[in-house]
Image 1 (tube, protein in one colour):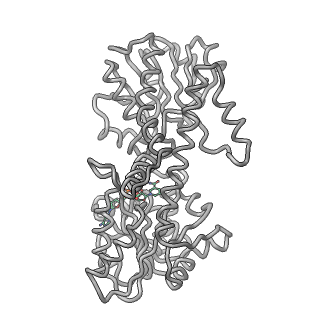
Image 2: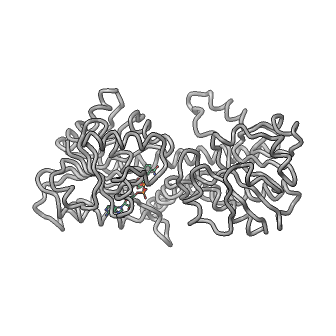
Image 3: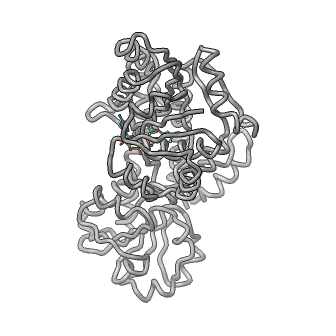
Length: 433
Ligand code: NAD
């Protein structure tokens, strides 16, 4: 089949490369020239494990191409996926659909023959209806059907998530369009990935409800972590104890600095706004958003407390900046609020991240970057683990103690146990223990 991805970011590029791997002919389109140039030269614009290899293989086999010319790519396509960004709209927190609608207009103008247009971007309930209206207005004769097919991949594990999804959700009332989508996903279907075909609005809401539930689960364990600290319990053991109950499950029960990233913060907020517009109050999600917002600065106060109540003019070494390991994505990373709060309290922040430092420069001011944990630990008053990259899981504490001014470790991801760190002369603070 001939597929087009509009938007070659974390979702569009990974999905496009994986679809090409299934044997489809794929063109990934973007409007950022530098991105397309880089891809044509074999340079990945993002860090995602395994992506370069799969892109290279499919480019060599001629199944994967990159283009700036949307109209040319769309002309002969069977299926066009819209995978552009849907960030929070400045000011009110609704999902900003400007990129989706602009792409829909361009696609409607260019499409010829029967074409399925798929919203793969995360879009609020009813967006598919609006895309359909745009198509009819721009090109009344177009033979286009609009389908919702939300994406559930996780950055850092995007390729395996895409190739082995827990489920594929397809939102359409059209049997013809559903059959086209089944053909697109046939290789996964043969692997027995469940396909759920439902109404378009239901499909759109499944994505938000799923993300909101996961955000709520993280927030739940973070609240329990706060209680653990007050009553002398260990949140990791509480999480294990409840996670063994199959009705609860053990995933997303890691206490930490709060959720971040390009999805949970904006999607929870957008869901709350959709509910408000429909005279519904989603109290659980609103509480989740509020708690998570406050949590990041609360983590900075934990650092201050670990430094005897003041970080003024002290050097704080931050390990990990991205919102999670194995990505270079800095969008809404907890590190941003934590570092800002530390700087507000007078700290001098040095930081290291294996992949995120380049992206971090445009988000953070007055941070000195170092080449390794040991590089930034020199003369530091405290070391703070913010993102649990593997390379921070086996730190050389005797070496760090030699380098640091005062041996304090604040472990916001509970990578270590007290008993592994304090024998080296460190004072240790984790989360919820
Ligand atoms: P991104 O910012 O990495 O990529 C979007 C790309 O679209 C950019 O490269 C941009 O230049 C391009 N673009 C915008 N308008 C265009 C147009 N008219 N023509 C061509 N290209 C255009 O975003 P992302 O992280 O890939 O997210 C895309 C969507 O997928 C969002 O709705 C997001 O919520 C959703 N999503 C993201 C993830 C994730 O982990 N990142 C997971 C599931 C769903």
